[in-house]
Length: 102
Image (cartoon, rainbow, N blue to C red):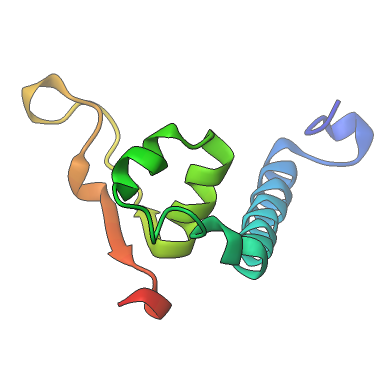
């Protein structure tokens, strides 16, 4: 249905539109997380063993904490297999501290 010219939108138009909407959604989710993540550090930052508390936390809390503290960027990789027959290139992943926590 979507991406079908019979419905007024080509596949390329849908792809461009969808990419824009998905990017905006990620930005909004990050903003919501930042505004409500003050609680993400509670009980972890002041714990005797913050690593153990983090690992025991549910996935949503772990994600909120990661979103609060670090920025992960996945760059576009090359198509096809790389050296050693791998598809994944770790050089395409950039991990850095969020500006507020440097």
